Image (cartoon, rainbow, N blue to C red):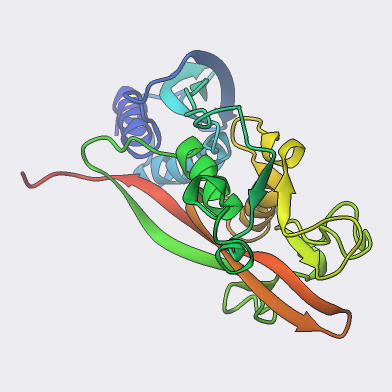
Length: 273
């Protein structure tokens, strides 16, 4: 095909497959990538164009993360080679937590057994953590967009099994930066050893106030991020569910939070409507 046609087809295909120019953003930056393709003549082989497309797709994949996406790809001929100018959009508006005036303590899920008078939905720590994370990571899907290749990871009392996408809450991978703090907060997800002197079945006001956009209380967001980076770095985090749990191990009885975390690929397709 002619050189002009090759550039046009490549640019059109890359923008169709990789760019999302319609997504709202507040920041736009430009980066460049170069591919060695002999454009010095009047024509170029179809196989070379296919190879160039595959190489560009691999390079462009690194630009799409939870915090940014490709806005537009512009291909130019430069000294007989292909130069790609990549517009990268970021600066998404995140949903803030419902308030910043938290009660003195947030009760864990089992509070309806321990103290039915104090137990109410607004004071359930696992519910609040779930709401914060899910609110901050909503995707306003555009017409024709859909999630696929969905996978779900579980952090619970079950033994770690990577094929089953399960982590034990006390697995070293889930360890807190301050482990074995007298049995208090040993896991990235909430944990408390029954009878431990440094805490109780509540997350205190300081812990519940921790908020940095995508992040949330007591290491839950860190656990979500670690799993994604380790097992599915090309996927987006799409939601979580939090619940309470308990497990007796040789060290004693532990009260914990159980987390279910979902990841998926985002794609655009045609519409029959």
